[in-house]
Length: 216
Image (cartoon, rainbow, N blue to C red; front, side, top):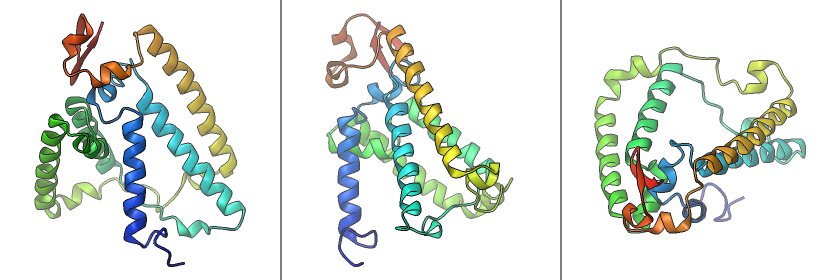
């Protein structure tokens, strides 16, 4: 298959990128107020959108394999390296909380002409450059605590794939219910007016939250 929509074509990457950016912006993820509200447990849009994407991809790939339209080997499964994952997760989580963006939402913010997103983008490029410079000397850290070779949860836990998927759906449902309750308890979720307001002070009395301020 050689159509531009196939994954080997430049057009498919551009199309997927534009669609992904549109979905992020439509979800309000181009605003650091929406994103940092996840850390204050006031808005669970990040959890809900991302977990939904995980479920759609996981169930979709499972059904494609059952239908014989995709081989299991068609999806690359990387080997887990525990220390590099823990360190990388801590760094990106800290940057997310402090700056209000992750790499993807930063690009969305830049496309929306947000100055703070542009500053974050410059910092991201600088950080990537520094990482590339020290990559080889730190190879021992990246490859430390190697996990099972290219194993997925079904192989790791010894359970059928449908049971893993059912468990993920149950976790998502419980998370959605709990998240909605926490949102109501903390005056959330963040509204479109709060996302687009130029100053947090325009929204009335506010309380400090990591990376931003929100209406009390």
